[in-house]
Length: 494
Image (cartoon, rainbow, N blue to C red):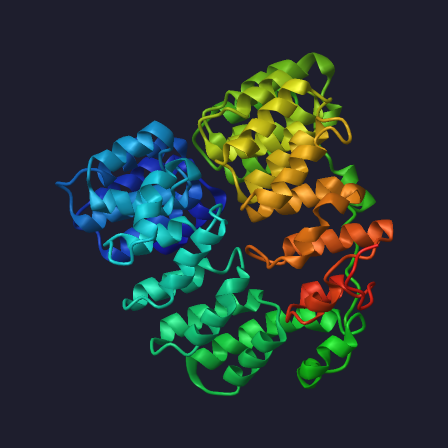
């Protein structure tokens, strides 16, 4: 097999028996840039926890060539193995800008005090890395403004990064700036903005992408790709909001949307479930070498309910204490299924963020507990969670709180919190008790229209006429238009 073929095999199988040989090649100053690039990708996909210490040593060694150090740090970054907490700050305090760039790209909200000064300073030499770092989980309006301002930076590298990081959270305030960026003098910046605009479901954006797609070159190719993605959502709603879609009807074509196929597993799929034996689990997962892709896949597929009760605690203890964070994260579903609450609660305090996220999510499905309710509320209230982790923590808190007991705090979150995901989840948890916060419908969105759409859904469910319908109908947003379909132009609630 060729070297390229062997690398491909190692990556596909996550064959960790190759880990240390690959690190040696990566650390070789005579290796070519192309070879290091390929090894970076393979090591990142291996996700071998044993690689963390040697890669960290290489990445932090200022006597090594910059290319070698950069490659080692990239592997840690791509495999989500960068330090957290006190170790993150210790690396930062060493004052090495190459390391600091990596840290900024992987920062958590707990590091916001060091991240934010760089993100808001367009002249800082590490500004671009800070913008990458706030792509996920930094959703308040001020963080969105740092990204949007990056679209006007004199450095095209920063402008392209800004266009890229506006993809995930889709702030309403970014749409017009992205329209301008689609005409950026730098083709890379323009194409990045065009790619991000596929997430902005407005008639104006669809029309703009169509116009750009009629040209030639890279921008036109990117626009055709984004337009096709956006058209999927518009065509799906042709029968729901035909009048709203009239200005772009010429772009939609005839309604041909097919209903999605069922995602229910077939009888054949269910018949192939395997019940793992305790001895097999201990043997297979104690070996840190060899192909790990099938091992990790098996963890998600085993029929854990069929495991004998006498074997469960031993397996649960072994998996939840495993050295590989991916095993610990996968074990959370098992622990929840078996109601191994103490072990699962311990993983909610794990050193690895991915493990903590999984544990907090799966705590939702264990018997109601005041301790879990208090713990997850403290996570939300601390301000250190946002995005997916934030709303999952709030949903778990609600699952462990009696109906209505959380309402005052949910109402306060909707009214005053600046985290979009938290507000939207609070709206969802309030459900038919939404009346005290309906005035929010008359306000402009903090980031997206998600809170407004959630409120409209709650109003529809209880047959309540919401306020501000007339003003909301003027908004150029497909999802909001669809949410308004059951309401007429009455602007006063009753």
